[in-house]
Length: 494
Ligand code: HEM
Image 1 (cartoon, helix red, strand yellow):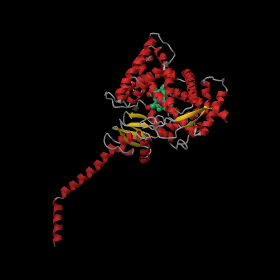
Image 2: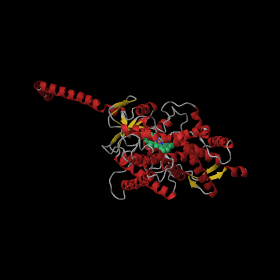
Image 3: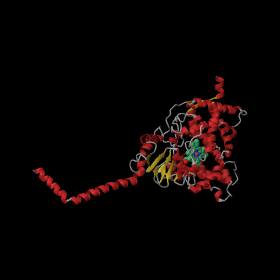
């Protein structure tokens, strides 16, 4: 009886409020579908590329910093996220959304649209440290002109003199180390070799105390490039900016002496100053010359030295490759008079050696990825990218992709006998920002391999494979210590 009464009451309420309930249901339905459509319209891109953005601004910054601070290196951060999310993933670092682009097609899209759809992000500390006229910071129009004018001294033919000088310097220093008989760190050795050779080629500085002062200041500038730009004494930024001031003074002094005719050596700087009387579009002003001298030293030294160090490590771990390389170098040396320097023709004959260089660059990935910022909304390989997102061409992944390289973890120089797919081998980047020092890096590595494998055997004195902490260029924490043994002694002993 009571039940019947309640049911009737409910029916009464429904009848009286029929319209209200209908409107309420309609409103809930419309709100539900509208909110779904709105969400799809606004977050469509984000849903397409998986990955965690984490908290606003902070995102996954701490995980990234933790990987950078570990001996596995900062690429471990990328590697793990690929495992979790798949090839394409997004993350948020220092308040910016980052996409890691994992394939040659994506790389081609970005390289082909450099300066148009994508550009390097502006980093204040970098512009303050290397200078606003640096190739790394200038806008597209200046970039074209400055790059064109800087390029000539880095062409293959202009590097003949560099090759001879580098070869002599290297032979002398290797011989001393071997006679000394002690273990030495390849990384330190290569840092000094590349630095001294570059300063000689760029501005004929050869005096050791001046070289060491410039090197110390360049290191401070390099450290300040990605620092917090606040001028507080003791900070990396403060030290870098102070070092930059000293470097500019040194460069200004050298330029002054050249202009007064007190010094006229044939080098990169002199070739820039010889353009003084040309129209503005055909020359660089002093600040452009000085900022780019600094840029060239910083961009060239650590990269080349790290690659040289890795070649020693990989060849140590792969005796077969080392033996083939050695044989090739000995056959080249045999054809030349005793003690003769290596020349351009010899370099062309180092065929296996140049494959060792390529394989070293593929395996070591000196520059792990190449960062760009999207200048407008666009798509890369069907993935929608929003204006302001950071897109990183992931050279490391491309170089280790088993679809592109069979047994990618194996050091196998012979794999370069085959033509590679476009944009699948990009250690020097591509497009308008291709490495300016590509020829210099290659000849430096070739001469090094020729003299090392052709003159010596070596033992690796620390097998630790951990990477240096806080480094953006992967390098062995141990510095790759080796002890040299001259081949002539090895033959005598045998
Ligand atoms: C093994 C050694 C080297 C490697 C792996 C390397 C790699 C690269 C890569 C990948 C880029 C392009 C980065 C991007 O697209 O964001 C680049 C740019 C550059 N590199 Fe190298 N580099 C090496 C040696 C050198 C040397 C020896 C010099 C100079 C003497 C040099 C000077 C430059 C400059 C000035 C740029 C900027 C070019 C521009 O923005 O137009 N690099 N390098």
